[in-house]
Length: 562
Image (cartoon, rainbow, N blue to C red; front, top):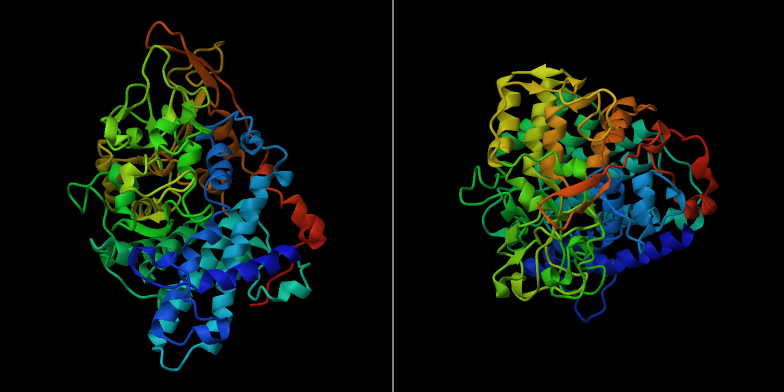
């Protein structure tokens, strides 16, 4: 861990010293004149630029394989048997995760974000020139506190107790540290987000997308709403969600902005759109680690990418496919099914059509493929892009989620609700998707399955009971492949609880199997397959390399001194 921390701090110094200029401001190189932390924070532009690195490369270890493994494979939206990435199989089967590379990649990425945030929080106030306005200094500090909070929010949901580090340089000489308890980590996250809410600039997201790239006071409020929701603090979650909604800062594509659709949210041309609360910023065609790698993993083939990648290493499970009705307009933008045509992909030949029957297309034997975050060739994206490096940003949070948080917070744990506030919130999302509005939100849990046939094979149509939760399902349909499902499953049974019987039962019914088309008609033969974790597997083990370097990680957590 010591070697990693030293490398992180050195990398941080490089990443924080970057220049500015519109869309590419996050990736420009520093001027040729020597710049050091000690003389960098001398102008307003330098202070604004000091947070640029926090939006991109420091997150790279989580974006792509790692995030998809944790959230989509373990969660049950995706399946794989890809032989060149054994990590995927371990997350789907909840096995051997402590030694898995993707587990380490996530841990390192989040502590990288934390280290860079700490560097700015600790250095900026003592190094900044008096010529820089306090509001600009406070905004930069707010951004850093926001980023640190979001990194810890990921860490605590994946690992539980983790070390709270506020000065990463301390770890160079003393890198063996105890973890801190989950409750303290959430308290720390809230403290950071409240700082960001107070100090970050207030904004109104407009149609000049380049100016929307940074997080704001409203971004912090939205993230606070989500954190409070996880803690089941419904009153504060509702208060923060309504603060965001009433601010007018963000807008829903296709609702507040006519002519735009759910599909448009994921076009490179719409990076930093009005619905974006927090996006990671990628430079298509940049060196490995600075461009978005997700298309290379998810795209069905290289015809789509035009850059010799497109490995289809994850396919959408049948459990996820079955969740979308034929009228749900999000399905085609999330999952490719046989016969789907995409005019925005491979535009030079008239678009891409996912192969139909017989011999339908199939990623990981699912008779489907993932569409979300698949954006096409460089030519489809203004000439920008390269192998494993597209320019579309990664959503960490969208405005649509705030409405789903609002609905859940209004219900405050109730099993059903016809409250107008809750219905209005969830129906905004359903209406955009082309679904009929609900008159009652039903979260009754497991109910008798009307299709159950006693003595039948327990495939996805014949479980004695099925899970009924309008909010959970709506979140899943809306946020599939945006790295959220595993975290939602982990909170279903309560906040910071050791046992997860409800989530286990849900996962045990997810058909994660394969199918093969019969080559003679538009039919497939499904072969169901099921996995289920134990309660102890809802928190992933610390990476084995970290435990080896810091045995204190396995000892009882120590209360954090605030």
